[in-house]
Length: 76
Ligand SMILES: [Zn+2]
Image (cartoon, rainbow, N blue to C red; front, side, top):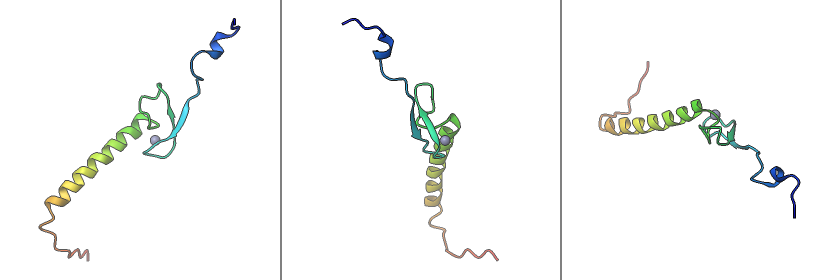
């Protein structure tokens, strides 16, 4: 069977998938052109990594200062 329009039947449909950005919750283009996928941008990707790193640092810091915690946090 001859095909008159091979380009229309070959390969996958070039439709960009839209996913939710884990950082800002916005639309993120899940395509090869988006190097920060599944994030919407490199900025969000870096922000997510920064949050993950700070979370680890915060846990380590709280664990280190746990012995000196008195619970008396009077700010007046
Ligand atoms: Zn984002």
